[in-house]
Amino acid sequence: MDAFSVVVEDDEDLDRAVVGSDGVRNHGGELCRVAGLDQDGPLPHLQVARSARMLAEWSHRAIGQLANQDDPVITRALASRTTEQLLCALTIMITCRTPAIDLTPVAHPRSVTVPGYPATVLHDENGPWQRALPVARELGADTHVFWAEIAEHGLRVPTSWLVPSGWTALWSRAHTHRH
Image (cartoon, rainbow, N blue to C red; front, side, top):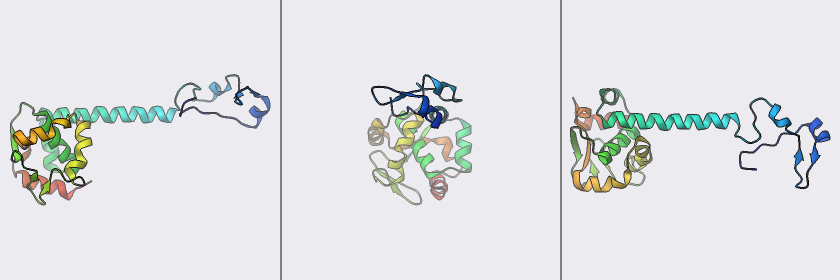
């Protein structure tokens, strides 16, 4: 039996079940009669959780792809309201993937300080940029190239994200909505 196996017994079953040599009662396949329960498969709620996780992974990849293509939907969403974690993750993803769109550096090559209010640093283990790395991977970033891209090109975002107010205003709005 694996970690998700289930044994169901009630008083009537205890009287009828034959105990095998391994100490486990044999119910003769009666578990199959319990609605939605499969002796060999996961419980229905685990199947729902797995489906929800797969849907979340798919939607994160789709958002990453839209950002990578500089889709106006992402630009409008960032202009209206975004969170610090999402903006960091999208920025990391764009920096790592280097799409063939107009990009604007928000931090110079080899710089670990990101301007804005408040200014942040990329390497702070408890800072927003490091916390956003797992989300950037979910969006489709190969974060192994992050530091090489920072060294060569700096932290970059699609130019469309900066219209009309620039990085400082975008970062300030996102920082206001941390979660």
